Amino acid sequence: MTATIDRRTFIKLAGLAGAAGVMPIRGALPLAYGADGADAAQIIAGKNPTMIVHNAKLGVMETPLAVLREHRVTPPEVLYNRLHFPVDGSGKWMATLAPAEPQVAQAWSILVSGLVQRPKTVRVADLERMERVKVTSVMQCAGNGRSYYWEKAKTPGSGWKHGGMGNLTWEGVPVLPLLASLDLSPDASVRFLTANGKDVPPVPGGADMIKSYPLAAPQLKDAILALRMNGRPIPTVHGGPVRLVIPGYYGNMSVKWLTDLMMMPEETPSALMQKTYRMPLGPVEPGKFTTQNLTQQNSDPTYGFRIMSVVFAPLEGETVRAGGVELKGVAWNDGLVPLAEVRVSLDRGNSWLLTELDASDGPYAWHHWRKRVELPPGRQEVWVRAVDAWGRAQPLDGLTTWNPGGWSWHGVDRVPFQVA
Image (cartoon, rainbow, N blue to C red; front, side, top):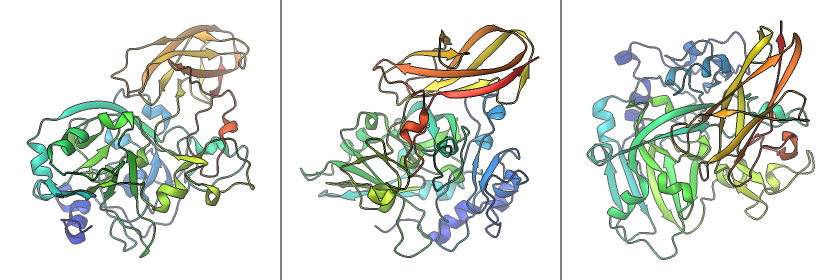
């Protein structure tokens, strides 16, 4: 498909340094995996300088939990960032937290095509005139928590802890009603919606970041073409001016800089769909199973979130005063059914205490949980485990879901701390 905005214009959109008074990403920066000294604000202008940088060249960074826990809705300056390759194939990526210039954003177009009799083009300006909805949802990298798998065996990719996530409010046009209104006359064999964005592989012929979704998937009914994030135009680095957002799905499925929606009979053959972002259906062993063993028969794409909970306080290494200690954190799932309960353990899973859960901001948002306990001085360790209405629960041993991509970590969170 031919995008309706050329790459030169898109680079102008992505740069925006002059208009915003900020500096773009510096493509010449060396890789800096978990580099404590890397200043995130010098990599992506506008980012909080305390962000944990995993890859400076691509601006891959996660949020320290001490910062993430301060916000019910995650501000863009502290939201994790994950880019797969430079947008223009030149080996340089330019982006800031600034949104697209209005005249560029309004002209941005999405081609809706594939196995349809009447392809249609929709501009952002058209979407702005349509009825929009809001949804608050966790946005999470599929690799969030990957470093915990490394206790069993190292996997490729950044060593994320729990900061590859955020809780965001999106506003946009519902996807399925929009498609129904376009009079596309799709072929009867259409079963998948496929999305493509403006970014391109750095190597000609390389795997593109194209994603496919079953039209029958329950979360697709809540998918939107997002134009706003937390009430403002989406920052360019986070996919603006228009991003496909599927609540309850991992971040790689919410395609940034959306240019194409295609009605297809099968999933895209892109390796990033068929090999990279897939979870084996059962346990696999390091060395005996790699991403090259993945097929549509023995694995699933990284679609919906696995149920998860995280401790926000106390954090690992923190010291709290003896006596009444408030344990707290967040929990979430894929939004298909409500969370049933969140429990904590202070004796390594031998007994569990029920926490208090708040009402959250919708089925896809995270729930805050808390529990006040009496603790004596000394080393303590809190475990937290969530269960939903279908009985889905975090495994006590997260290593049981080890996989060669390091995806979908959702083991019980275990946090040691000191009581003084």
